[in-house]
Length: 289
Image (tube, helix red, strand yellow):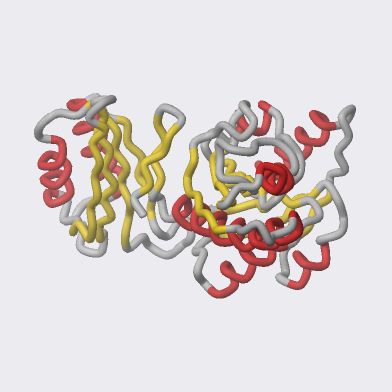
């Protein structure tokens, strides 16, 4: 849902085969429309031969309109066979948080949103259990419960998708949502469902990874934020972090330490997504953080 305020800045993402002249062509295009580049970052995957760039620019002195600007970008994109995406700062992303019974990631994201750290809208929280309704309510956010069993999973997800569409949701965040989402939901939000996994992937996938780590006697545990795909815990990784453990730590200690990581890793991934800093390719990401 777009704000009525005019956009002051915008972010352009481009992806294409690497070749000479791309950076110059984009800079000349924006200059020609009166846009001022505020910052630009780029990356070339020399093995894949792919070029990626993120450009944030000021629109306040632009002497054309959005239609003309986007037509100009499309012309350059066709010349370089380039994929592109343009995001305007006044079009705040709308996020739905999915939770089960764990509240630490939910609280953290809602506090960050209230403090202004996450510049987005959070119109609803969705859960398969009723326990966290009071948390959502104290932040003034609608809470919706969809109890899920093996027999009702697809039916309930269809209802969830209908709700998400009605609220014009741009991003789904699985904030310790203890359900495997189906291909239907993933297909509806490709590269727009962020999951937090309580392990440093690819180690210890699936359930109870902290207990697996305890049994293995690891010296580091971690957390991973990634885009959900049809392959469980195999989606493009956005952010990871680790904390050191010792032989004195119990499984409960690992859970406690891990939850601290989950909060910060998930928050960074969500912030980078809503600030249009993430590009996905070949089940990997380029993160212009």
